Length: 433
Image (cartoon, rainbow, N blue to C red):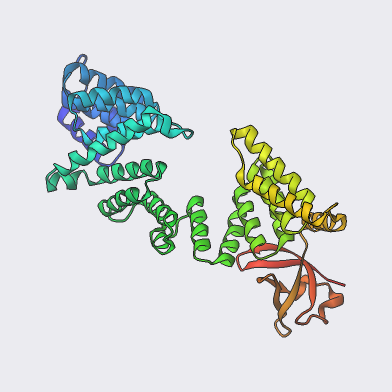
C-alpha cells in the first residue's frame, strides 16, 4: 500500500474518531528521525485522543525540539498532564506556552483551572494559586474583548467555560452578584445548554433570596443528586414544606446522608412532630456521630419538648465537639444552654420527665407515629391518616382484620410509614386504645 493511500486511510479513521486505528496508521508512515511536523502533530493528537498520554508527550517533545517558539507544542505537553490531573506538571508547561504567546486563550483557561485544583477545598482563599487562578480568568476578558466576531464565534465554548470558572471563584469570595453576571454570559455563549452553570446560577439566585429565578435556572430533568438537593432548598424557600419533605424522603431512598436526615428533622419540628423529628435525628447521628450540627438538633428537640436537662447536656456536647474539631465557639448552642439555664433557675426545674423521655426513645426506635383517620373510602378500601398536617395513604389490607370494619374518620391509629412513588404510605397500623 503506497504512502498516499495509507495517509488517506489514517485521515478516514481520524474523521470517524477511531483514534487508536488512526494512530497506528499515522505511525506506520513515520520514518526514523523524521522532521515531518504535520505527521508528528497527527501522531501526537491521536495519541492524546486515545488517552495514550505518555506517547503523546513524546511526540509533542519532538515537536518542541524542532519548533522551540511554537506555543502550541508546549501547550500540548501541558494538556497531557492536565488530563491525568497532574496539575503542577501541567502548569509548568502552560507557563512556558504563555511566555511565548501571552494571549493564548485556551491555555490561560486550562492554566487557571489547574491552579484552582491545586488549592484543594480547605482555606482556599489563603492559597496563592487561588488568586493566580482568578487573575488568569480575569485577563481572559480583555483578550476576548479584542477578538473579532469570527474569533469570538470560534472561541465561544472556551470563553463560556472561562466565565463559568471565574464565577465559581467569585462565589467562593461571596461576590454573588458579580458571579451571576458571569454565569449568565456563559449560558448565553453556550446557548443555555450548560447544566453545571445552570446549577450554579440557580444556587446564586437562591442565595440572594430570589426563589423564582432560582427555580427558572434549575437544570431540568437532571438525575444528579445535588440538583435534586437544590430543588428541595428552593421548595423550602417557596414555602412548600410538605413537597420538600416528600422529596427528601425520596432522595433518602438512594442517598443516605446525615444532613438530609437533619433537614427532615428540622421540618418535622416546624410542624410540631417531635417524635418523627427525633427518629430522623437519630438516623443522622448514626451516620455521623461526631457532627456538632446533629447533636445540636437533638438538643433542640429535647428543649422544645421540655426535657431540659437532657437538652442542656446535648447542647454542651455539641459545643465541645465544635471547639475540639474547629477551635471555634458554637454560638447557637451556647445561647440554647443559656436559655435553658434561665428557665431552670426561674422555674425551679429539678429533673426531666423519665416517662416522657422513655416514650420518646421507644417511639423513635419503633418508628411508630400516632395519627388520625382524616378520610376513608369504604367502597374502594383506602384512605388517609393525618398527623400534624402530613397525610399518609393507607389501604385496608394494612389494617388488622379485627378493626377493619370499625375504621372511621377521627379514629386514632399507631403506624409506621414508608416513602413510595405515591408519597408517604402508612404501614404496620394498629388502633390507639
